[in-house]
Amino acid sequence: QVQLVESGGGSVQAGGSLRLSCATSGYTYRYYCMGWFRQAPGKEREGVAAIYPSGGATYYATSVKGRFTISQNNAKNTLYLQMDSLKPEDTAMYYCAADWRHIPCEEFQYIDWGQGTQVTVSS
Image (tube, one colour):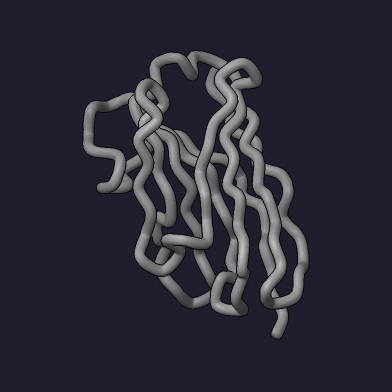
């Protein structure tokens, strides 16, 4: 049974930083892609960052490029999202997700999901 558990969300003022963590357990060695999504109220879910666990290549949505950094600690089975220069429009529920199928990670088609962690950025 695979589990993805996010943490690190919270409230921050614009310009601040947060680091999200995603602790994974189970058969995570199968994963071809891991990534972060977000969904704001009334908006569709969007993929913001992805990583190929085996090689470390990363991909970012245009809206977060240069401000967010996705990384992994294989020894700890943990995925991270460092979020800097936060803006009010970054306010959303953030989800960790992963997929074992060999679909390009930047297509953001993932099967396994965490429960989410809320990020609120005030102006």
